[in-house]
Image 1 (cartoon, rainbow, N blue to C red):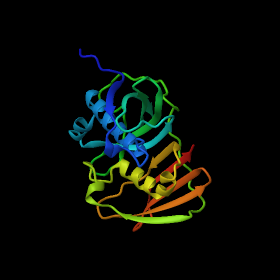
Image 2 (cartoon, rainbow, N blue to C red):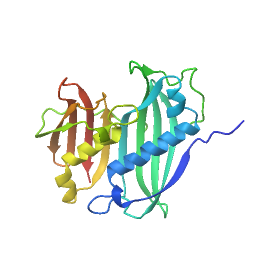
Image 3 (spheres, rainbow, N blue to C red):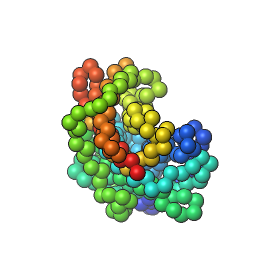
Image 4 (tube, helix red, strand yellow):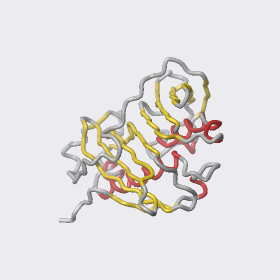
Length: 246
């Protein structure tokens, strides 16, 4: 029987279009790396996009928590490692570690995922007989599981975005990294002025689709920024993002 790896390692070279004004790898680019390596590893484990599509299901990212120790720079080579960490109720846990070419830890992250059915988008059990068993590694890269963000009492700024063609993924809803890009855009002045994000937490709560108008509310409290995103038509909460500056 073919052995199934408990982790997957990939080497990435930081591209010019993945960095910010200071040549730092952007947090959203880090999340793109995470998304790609998670997809690839899930395919190896026989529980990826194609396997789930065949039984009318798909993965969605529910929560993500990232610690930035160092920011890779343009042209740097980085090594990214990911592994499935087991099941917590309806959630599948997956961790990530990023290292420089000299072995320094740069980024650590924890994520939790759901499987939804394609018709009604209801959560499905991860340990279903329809899904294969595979090896797990219960080592924590950063924390055991991403935390829930509380709802801020008030917001000081508000923006609106209309969901466009380039925001939609293969599951026909807004790609998870787009929410992170919108959140980063809402604090762009801070980032341009040299603030660095120490920790980022994201809670995904509902889907947005093509043409939806998204209201982005921002609450700043010194080094802590909390962002809430709503479907402007239904007032349904879509996403919460929390940044802690260094």
